Length: 310
Image: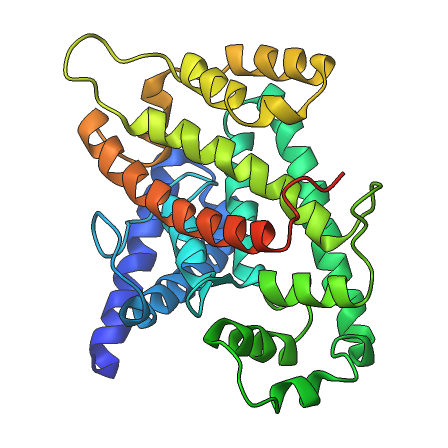
């Protein structure tokens, strides 16, 4: 694309953004956020397109459109999820955590009761980010003394090589490099609760399954009968996933929160669709992207016997 065409596209997008803000009011107040949102989202979508040759395409349109007036952007979520895929079975932590940032916005949009759950998610993403910062300040702790000797061994699988590459870029560069480092450093405790990155990741991993199942149920269109309420679907998804790891009190509080969930029409507006068929197309793409990340994380945790960390 030539310079003139790029400039024209940028101007058109800004005009559309301004038009949307005018319809919603507060043009002066939201001008800065509009520019910031354009730069951030445009970069994510370009990153998604540049990586499209590295993995199979997901269902739905190549690039999801922006949704004016919404804090949560489904296109940004999908971009982060696609960017989190590394090698054949690893997950990059930075875009993985960015995916959670967008999922937190999604949960907060569902009302104050559900936002109580999102606060717990933010606490856990903060723990991993702080561990990554500490690791960057102490680079000597990132790579064990036998790192180079392991690299020089005669035979290694492709997955082992992938972990070594991730590890060389930082202990918290990916899920597998974090697991390898924390096991090597003795940070993971299999008998008592700690704030290790692996234990924290496991809690996020369980929550991701809940959201995946909820969105999957929300995307389903029954062949006969009326569509079920999001409240019932979310509660069912919770009961078959996260509830197994929560106390009675937490389960009751969560189910009360789900009662206050908005009706289905709210979700149409949230992702800028007109009907259930369009919602199914968008959410199926989201579910597929989440499923890939979930499966890779599940495999890494299972291989290292970390699915039941206290």
